[in-house]
Length: 387
Image 1 (cartoon, rainbow, N blue to C red):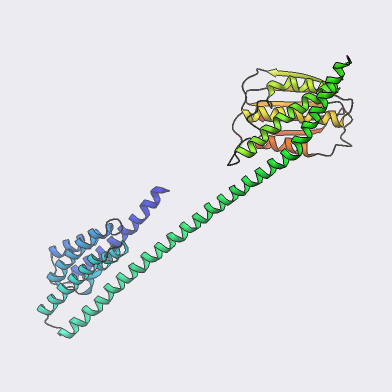
Image 2 (image 1 turned 135 degrees about the vertical axis):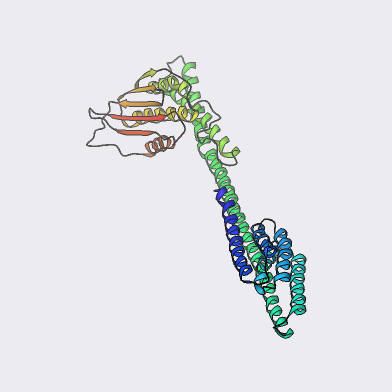
């Protein structure tokens, strides 16, 4: 694309120079006094117009001298002024003022003096009138170049203002997003942190009193104590991301914490068992390092699936299967609860969150009742870049 942008103006300028050269060559052929010197001057002056956009003073100088040679020697009339007119336009358009005016005065003055000195069939009045009309063309060329230059400058200013307005909108959007993250962080801290802390403290007190009395501590109470501690750590990590990430590019799950990883899968399943859920884990394939996003998403999917089994499939057993493949990671959680195809459960926020995680990674999620009864959650997560 850059090549085309550079080549297109050059093609236009070359075509312009060629057209002027052909016209003036024809004028040389029909002018009785013209000879080889005039043809050479015409070609040099015309072809120099190729550079009027990139080096405007070059065609102004070359064109003026060459056309003066042609005008003084052959006296062709107005056609000799064509290359000089284009060169004057280019020089004024580039921001020059004095040199184009000087070139115009020199060309018109020398041409007028030559015509007056050698005129045979024309009166001085006609010659002066013709030069005056030609002067008008030179003035029109300069004015047109000035207007074009100002219009171009105006368009550039408009583009700059539009770009600045876009940058300003982006900055405002980022600032508002940052303010919203801080508001959410405050709300989470003021509501969830306090409630979870109370649960953790109360569970800890109950465990302490039970042990002090020599009683067996219920497994559910220990699970509550451990789960509340994990929840507090993950919530703090999330709050840190919301407060400290200025551009919102951090991990919303709290990427600073290492808790949400498959290497803690055994702890997650053991916690689910402590609540009374019969759960098994099967890992197949060669276990290897996973991309952080895939590792975190897999952990969260298992966590959400086991939570749903505990809440909605009372008394059911769950099986967790993790398959490490070369191109993808497959995570599947099945239960033998009461869900059926005739009465599928209503998808909640948890299933929606699963689907969003998998979709963001370019994977596939299947969450539906099993033909033999119960529910299955199967996520296929690619190990490459998200598509």
